[in-house]
Image 1 (spheres, helix red, strand yellow):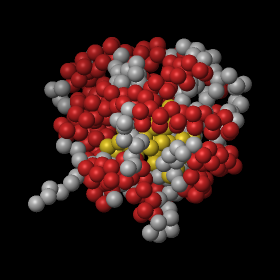
Image 2 (cartoon, one colour; image 1 turned 135 degrees about the vertical axis):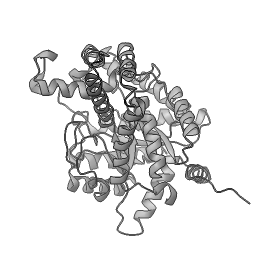
Image 3 (tube, one colour; image 1 turned 90 degrees about the vertical axis):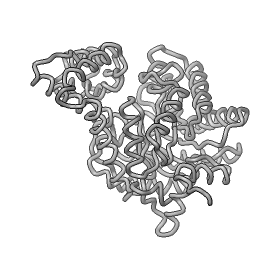
Image 4 (cartoon, helix red, strand yellow; image 1 turned 120 degrees about the horizontal axis):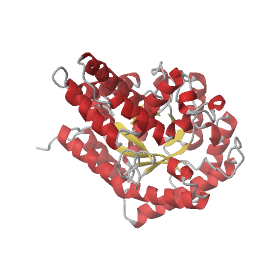
Length: 421
């Protein structure tokens, strides 16, 4: 009698049989479902940015509870060879996920992904004033580390060029050439290391990337398809598109998204992926518009931040003091990362010169960068100790984050997908 395979084991076996990546097999399953009706994708795969242990662990539990596949989309700021701001390298992050999958008995597909792999997409490369060539070599080395760690989906994003005047986008031809260069390097390394096939994601939603225009988006796909076919490279399974969202916006442009999703499928056989999904109010628009994937990051860190704020309120009622709020504020300001989120009219202002609501928002969204800072971590432990007699702090924070992730799984029509695809 043969034991029943779990969804994760089934996807892995099918991918091996097809000689493809896990991501490709999953995408093919969604495309196959779409071909049965009007060709529209009715599920939006969720990619969680692992910006803390709490978020990464809660995502696994939520995926298992929802019976949904889970993608982790790790930026080079978060997870890299230098540890990023989480302290994880690609290898140690992969080990963490593997250990948690085993400990929690998670049996749904879990896929490790790189988000925004390209020159100057890592803050440290800009801060250290690396040349384009130096940043490119760093990115290639990081991509190889991701391949070694077993990542299954790599986002290739060479859409930033600091040598150009501010506001001038990289020419589409250059984006295509640089994308192909990184694809070739990744594929050559993968084959040399005898690693299994991996999938790729291309494009960007960033305003400086030059792909906001639908005409330029389509031209990029046409040129890229031709170039990678000539080089016998794998076609990407996801294309990032501007669906109208930014970090602090709350609505998606459903009409535009549906057009971009159709173009991505027709031009290159890929699913459209939306980034900056964090503050979107009507998440049900994503599957309705045929968006095949969505990244969520700062919004989950915000859920963690909000849960900690509730614990601070409880601590205050107990007349105890951990210093956590002050430590967090100081660490965010000292990191300097808040400057990247300043609006044009705020450029050059000191932190304390900003309005109260903006200072709060910047600490809120910047908290993810400093969770592992020594004093932040120490004061958080003191906070937990101060309230433990009245509330289980770890369980409370974890519950709040897991609940937020489950909201995405439900809105994206993913509940039960792992068992049925």
